[in-house]
Amino acid sequence: MAENGEEKLIAVARHIAKTLGHTDTMTDDILKIFSNFDGRLREKLTEKLSEDGVEQTLNSLDRQISRYISADHPIWSNSADSASFLDSIDQLIAAVRDWTPLADDKNISSCLDRAEDLLQQSMFRLEDEFRTLVERGAESFDLTRSESTHPHPDYSDDDDDVFGDEDENFIPVAQPITDYDIVIDALPAGTIGDLHEIAKRMVAAGYVKECSHAYSTCRREFLEESFSRLGLQKLSIDEVHRMQWTQLEDEIEKWIKAINVALRILFPSERRLCDRVFFGYSSAADLSFMEVCRGSTIQLLNFADAVAIGSRAPERLFKVLDVYETIRDLMPEFELIFSDQYCLSLRNEAITIWKRLGEAIRGIFMELENLIRRDPAKDAVPGGRLHPITRYVMNYLRAACRARITLEQVFEESVASNVDYRKGDDQGLSSSSSLAVQMAWIMELLESNLEAKSKIYRDSALCSVFMMNNGRYIVQKVKDNELGTLLGEDWIRKHTAKVRQYHVNYQRSSWSKVLGVLKVDNNSTSPNGASSKNLREKLKLFNSYFEEICKTQSTWVIFDDQLRDELRASISGSLTPAYRGFITRLQGATDIGKNADRYIRYSVEDIEARISGLFQGTSGGRR
Image 1 (cartoon, one colour):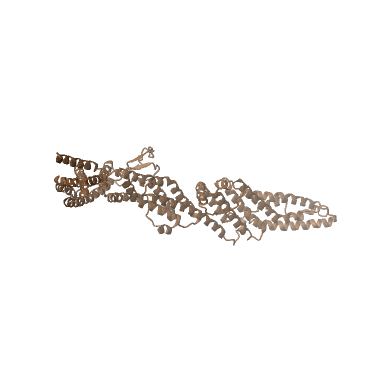
Image 2 (cartoon, rainbow, N blue to C red):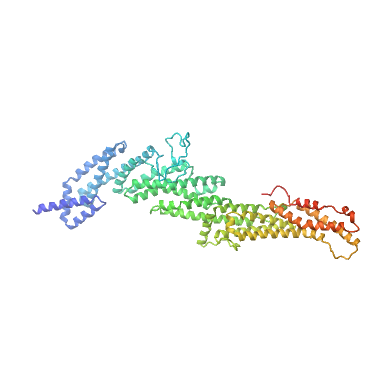
């Protein structure tokens, strides 16, 4: 009876071990517990295994599995073969688990070594089959199939098919993308199921890395081909820096399209595929996804980094802004897709490069400041016309402010990082934002530069015309756009008043002595003869002054039609009445009388006509 009870105990122990052994490595633990409980039990279990024919079992599995390992055709070309092969591998994996805790026994240890070698060969063959399935599945499957959470709008005309005749090599991501809410089914569902079954065995046998490597190698090739069809080149940072700017602009456009397709379509599709192939094995899925996408992600981020650390010439601002905004807008995708432990470094790198692009944008504005400071005050602009630096800076700032929201974000980041940036005249600014202060500072630099240039003119009146021209242009460019919103109405009023003051300064320095000649002392007690002589001398002096001013200032330029008309009207409004009064006084002199026309060179109409000819300059410079 005792022996019968012992047999039952051994049977129960083996049943428990075999049943629970299907979950991870619990078989090992159970057998060890039984062995530690009673040495006789270990001997009996070993003896029982021997009695069951360990070697016979191994020989049988060897014959079954070796037939498939040596096959010269894909095992998965026949469903019955693949099912039989997997079943044999399952038995082999279970046998290795059962025998491992009993490896101290020489007979079992020898069989275990053979079993592990056979398992390794099986895994190599599974790896080859896995790779073949991935490659052939991608070739045979219709890649135009995709899933979208929104219906696709019909962009085709009734008599014109957008896609035309389908090419067997057609890859849809190479076409212009308008709807990014797409997930590509890159492999047929049946192939995905087969891959999952293989992955399950390789993971169970401890060949996770080998399975992941086989998977990622094939899928990387798909991504590389997709990038190639999107026109994206593999460029080193040095190659990007050596590019001509126009060529780099084209590459940035391609990059923007590629990274949007990658982060919104390709990578999510790869994530979904990994999760299906390695379903139930999240760590293997995460590792495989990282291996698939790492190279392509680094390629995309390296290009953005090259742009960030490249030249900070002001003309590059707008493309750098495009790159900055693209990464910023895709940060939610980076956070979502690269959320696991293996992809953490990729997500962090994207954040680092995004911040570096912000630094580059701030650096470009610093370079703009340096450009303004370095612009020399050597040769005066002819006719006091608009200076090229004024036109360049104002048009630049207007264009930059179209990206006001982005620039505010960039400059607020500099404050958050305790970066000391420009301290301009921010009194009266409508916004206390860092961007508003930055813009006010640049305007202050520009004004200082123009004031230095105005001192080149020897004629103070022309100096005022120069400042009037440039001041008026600045105010006009600030009004009615984002730049004006930043600087505010108070800033505009202040600088409009400056333009008016330049107007006053011009009239004072240019026409005050002319008007002074026309003044007549009504209290003079001199006899009529002396008074008439004085009038004739004043008229002669007026003619000389007026002729000289008109000859000189007809070559000067007022670029703005309204300002030119206002200035002429102001001159005429002060000069014409004074001249008319003087002529009337001259004609009333007793010793001149009817002979006054002999001394009068200009009629009032002539004066007005000559004033109308002022500031004509040449056609150049008006804009």
